[in-house]
Amino acid sequence: MDAVSATSLVLWLAFAISFAFGVIGQKTNFCTLGALADIVGMGDWNRMRMWLLAIGVAILGAGALHATGLIDLDKSIYRAPGLAWLSCLLGGLCFGAGMVLASGCGAKTLMRIGGGSLKALVVFVVLGLFAYMTLRGALAVLRVNYLDPAAIRFPAGQDLPALLAAAGLEARAAFWLAVLGIGGGLLAFCLARRDFWSVDNLLGGVGIGLAVVAAWYVSGHLGYLPEHPETLEEVFLATSSGRMEALTFVAPLAYTLDWLLLGSDSSRGLSFGMVTAFGVIAGSAAWALATRSFRWEGFAGVEDTASHLIGAALMGFGGVLALGCTIGQGVSGLSTLALGSILSFLAIVAGAVAMLKFRLWRMMREA
Picture 1: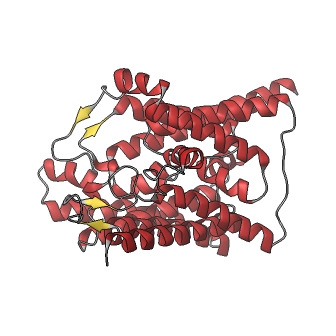
Picture 2: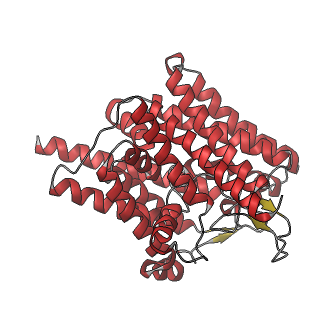
């Protein structure tokens, strides 16, 4: 298959995977913010178990693809030898707080657009704008000069299997210990409670996890050319980062805005990430229309508008710093077992919980 046909195949499969992601997310109410809000507000862990199940499935699936040689997780952005710990921490905290203010993470924003939310459409635009500013604009100066340089280098790799091997464990044993120990442990934790065993919970957890695994396979295997016919260099087709990609919803929103504005420029074609953004919107819209749950939604007032604008800005800025969102780092990144992904995930959770508790305190004070 030539490069043009392979690129087209990768993009169509990316759309199909993200369409399924949108359908599953809309049907099961898969929501990482909701998972944390349920715990903070009611002590209910069911939606958190759904998220953790998705992580466990993604770890096992990505590990299997890597072990069989179908993909090489070392060629993802998450396993870069440099761990920008300050960017991960600050970015995660900003993203976590922002998703509370904006009523959902990047993936949930796309699902809400599909369900008829005009509020989410505004969040999409502002999130994408601030993400682009942080990637290449005014905020990129702050990121490049002051935040990203605060990094720790791991010559052997920053993923847990590499760290275990560096500590003296045999490489293959280290790999399977990390993959089966963490991935299997998460599955056992989630499935241990019988009240979690509902169709939606299992579909949401397993389905989202498998969507990430499928994305790795399409981008990292079907989209991989060891030698491009024109450049004679190794390439992952249709990726903005130049490396293989899975599902993530911050930087792709920035590139989507860029394409919508400057798409007539032949140098700006569709990418894997852009297509997945469109696919999630289409999938969630299809489910909302099929089940007659599609509802137009607007802002309730000035405070609601301000909250969503600030939250979107924080998510755009923080998501680029942290190299992803609750799906990008919280599922795709964690499936590589990278230390940076673990750090970003914990920071996102901490930022979201802090903002949820602040809002709860404020609500009780006003009451």
